[in-house]
Length: 217
Image 1 (cartoon, rainbow, N blue to C red):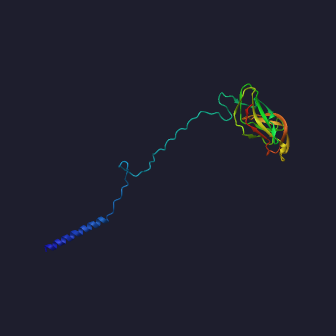
Image 2: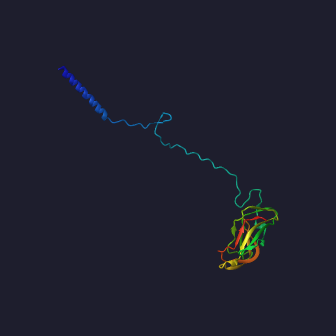
Image 3: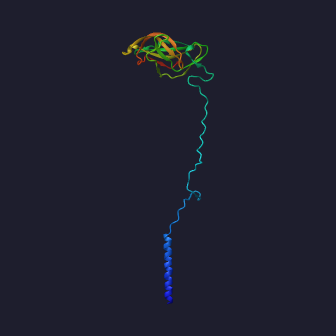
């Protein structure tokens, strides 16, 4: 009888243990923590979050530069640009000609009492008279010679190569008599009239003239 009671007790104990194991296996698992460990320090750090208070890096202030002369002007204390009112114009046809073209020197001379600077290209057109409008196309620029500052003391001359192509070379020229050339010094809106009768083309699509940059004479 006693052995039967012991057997029943062992059976009950075994059943209770089995039930405990089953309940433990069925229980829900605990959530994982979002804490990570930084390898370099071994300290725990929370997951990164954005910070609305982060300020953008400040931009550096623009560097200041010394004031430069505006286009068409000279630095303080330097001679002014030569203007039509202080110049005389002339041509020198000693340049000769080739293939229906005549090469001449366009000379501008400082007739004033102060030095001035010629720099760049003159504007040149053929005109019917001293007050007339341009005939045909104005001179194109010949860039074969570089632009330099040409300082003209009173009485000194700057020169540029002016090429005239014979109007008779063009079948659709529509020839017109021209009384001479209208010359605008570089950076100037006033002009000089240079009497020199020749033929111009009424067709503005034909360019008879080209002009180079001024050089010292």
